[in-house]
Amino acid sequence: MKNPVAIVGVGQTKYRRKHSDKNTEELVRDAAMAALMDADIGLDQIGLIIGGVAPDSLAGISNIDMSSIARPGIPYFRVNTGGATGSSALLAGLSWIAAGRAKAVLIVAVERMGHATSAPIVFNSIFDPIYEKDISMSTISMVALRATMLMQNYGFSQEHWAQLAARNSATSMKNETLENPRFFTADQVKDSGVLAWPIHRLEACPTSEGACAVVLAHESIVGDRNAAWIHAARGLSDTYAIGDRFHRPEGSLVNLLTLDLSAKAAYKDAGITDPLGQLDLVEMQAPFASSEVMAYMALGLCKPEDSIAFTERAIENRASIAVQPSGGPQAANPVSATALIRITEAALQIRGKAGERQLDGIRRTISTGQGGATQFSTAVILGADKP
Amino acid sequence: MDNQQSEPLTIAGNWNFDYRYFAGDTATRFFKELKDNRRIMGTKNPTSGTIMVPARSFSDADYVPTTEWVEVGPGGKLEVFSIIGAKFPGLPDPPFAIGYVTLDGADTAVLNYVSGIDLSDLDAAAEVLLKQPRVKAIFKDMREGRITDFHFEVVDDAE
Image 1 (cartoon, chains in turn blue, brown):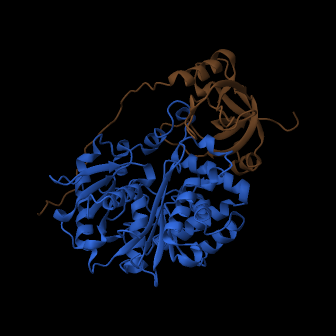
Image 2 (cartoon, chains in turn cyan, yellow):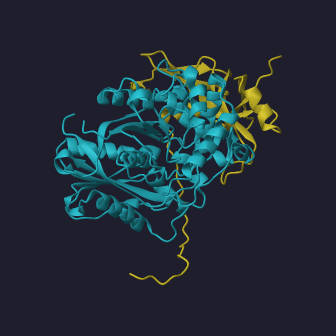
Image 3 (cartoon, rainbow over the protein chains, first blue to last red):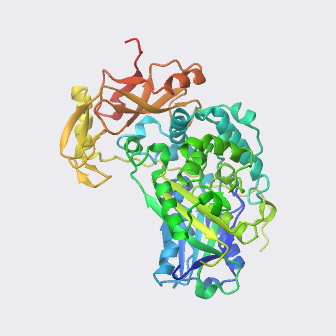
């Protein structure tokens, strides 16, 4: 790869329902300073800062960029692609380095949704105000619609959703970035009440706040730093209109076309022909069990006809790839930061710095980002070896 | 820096901004057809032949302007659904069902409320809706030129 780039530092606050002891600028600073310290790079060496923040209305601050890191002489811009914000910001940073405009880029994504005391109303406002807003859509019902399609097309059951949610909750117990990881069983999920059939209350990710920061470095300044190299980073966008995605020959609503195509392009860049054989770990921006199942297929981890069998192996931790070792976004889903956290988790595993959740032999990983009802998808492949 | 240990302060805030969303000429005609003529209209992409419902002035798949208005429905197929089972602030009281429907003659699906199904047992109702039943658009008597001027009702197979 020409001009390889590496992640040389990451920093995360704890993820929890609310950080009432910190204002937004303080959250950003905590993550940014941790990442810079991890990278052993000073703020003065940073050539670009990118802020990742999804809708302002979740934080209730019209100009959330006030929490950006203000440094005269360092350019700044903000990225917002919903749940893919964090990974989109990383892609933007890579482009700046590839263009020769910076040697080191600091990316900070922050989620402040704990401010919102009526978050469902805010989430309703992301839908089309002309044709859809009045049909009471929510992010949860939007997910539920696809879950019912998976059930009707591939034979998934409510049991699968409950077991996968329980599996992710058990896995998240080792993730020290979670302030209060939730442990529950599949039966508890099924007994937790229907939010939007087939989604039950415990399957839905909790309100999550926190910040995540990543330092990207051009190979010329990586030196002997502990690096996770970018092997591929691709992102694509699609129509906003969910209703336009049912009858397309390229794939239906549950085929996650943008993720599928992003992954294929990333695999090509990274020379991957057998994802299951060549990748050691997958971290998906999948805030619900059904989103995770759709991602398995889009990433080529299984064929649609084998999706139930693969899901059952994932539930039993028998898949031949490490699946969501952090517990994934079902454990904590700070919207603006969540896709950057997926990349950060993969980088921590490659760099051997994942604490109690560290796995052995993680050499190559894939992380996804999904935003705006999969209007935006990203696929980022990291590796221990310089490409 | 030592901070005095005390309960972190919370400052109350409220966003209550009013907006008026400009629907544009194409959606305006779509809504007028609902209100005045009880008709659901799509627009045709001349390149692909695709009929888009609800009506759009252009296809964002290829950025081609649509050229022709076509009536679709009122019958159609329920593609996907959800039954909202919990109260969310600002949304209607549960339970209620929503779904995307491909109306007869359309190539895209449109979102609306779905009725005509007993929602007292959510799992039983879901079993019926998972079969992707036929539905038809039912128009309100008092229409105001909004997407809620109609909703979908599950059609009894015996009909």
